[in-house]
View 1 (cartoon, rainbow, N blue to C red):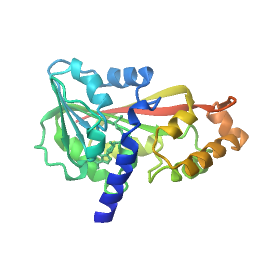
View 2: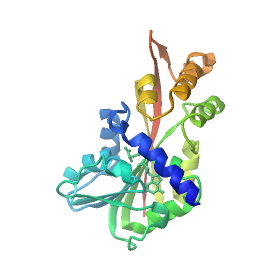
View 3: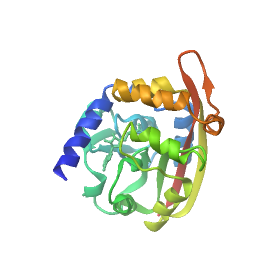
Amino acid sequence: MKKVKKDNNAFWKMRSEHYNELQWAKNNKYLYEFIKAGRFNKKDIVLDVGTGTGIIAHSVAPLVNEVIGMDISQDMLEHSNWKGNLYFIRRDILESTFADGIFDKITCRLVFHHIMRNRQKAMDNCYRGLKKGGMMVLSEGVPPSKRVRKQYVDIFKLKENRVTFYEEDLVGLMKDSGFKNIKVNTVLLKKMSVKNWLTKSGISKVNQEKIYMLHKNATDYFKEDYEMVETENDCLINMKMLILTGKK
Ligand SMILES: C[S@@+](CC[C@H](N)C(=O)[O-])C[C@H]1O[C@@H](n2cnc3c(N)ncnc32)[C@H](O)[C@@H]1O
């Protein structure tokens, strides 16, 4: 277990340096749809789980009373800025020690695919932390279709340890923790650069090249489902993001 934590620290240290330069991370359309889903108001006390460098926390802060961004990685947090009604703390959602029922909203973007064990417990902790009537806004990236699953898994294996979700897995995860009125919105981030994603993700040069070639040499249906465009030095793909909301 200690080794897992140590490996995790090293992984996020490596990723933290260029995280804010990832094209998808600050994509306006993605942020707009995420914020819209949260229906935030000036009274809201918000917890941003797995806040990373605080991109979601910073976008939400002007719309609400207070935001707490929490993350397991000190290195990611060091790239966030404390400001006004926005606070950051180092905490693991699996060991959450927040009191029950204190948040109006909980946001969580692209975190659950990194939780390899006890995911349901992490979701239960989110549910517990919300006030009755509170809302969770969850977002994850998913493969564009069922038929590319194997290629998707092979590509991501070269990048990180992760869980591959489809919509039904995420809905199930929320439902099993007690969330009601679950709604799903699909956001397509169009023509995203594979090269940007690779060079800003802290992946070794060797694996960057392998992943790039897996795109270049992919099957026709992979290219079709990603609506992949090949340029001289890059591959542009559509990234499929799901934004789910659920009520306590
Ligand atoms: C891909 S980043 C997403 C950051 C941010 N939510 C965003 O959308 O830009 C995933 C973040 O989840 C954090 N994380 C992973 N497991 C966690 C856990 N068990 N508890 C808290 N944070 C966690 C990582 O340290 C990392 O900063």
